[in-house]
Length: 73
Image 1 (cartoon, rainbow, N blue to C red):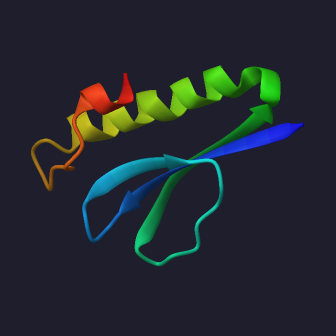
Image 2: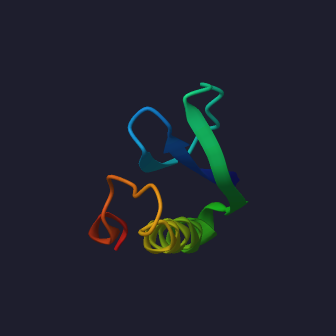
């Protein structure tokens, strides 16, 4: 079975979220998606979390996200 993960930026809140389903809400800005077998779920989630940590650190000088890196450890 194939699983998917999506990283979105909720524009109205400036918050990063990781979802397992695609979201077409215009308030959710799509940043990343990955997919793989169920046995790879932990690795896929780790990739999303790493992306989010990098996004937060990279945006510190501009419009900073409300998340902190500890949410994605």
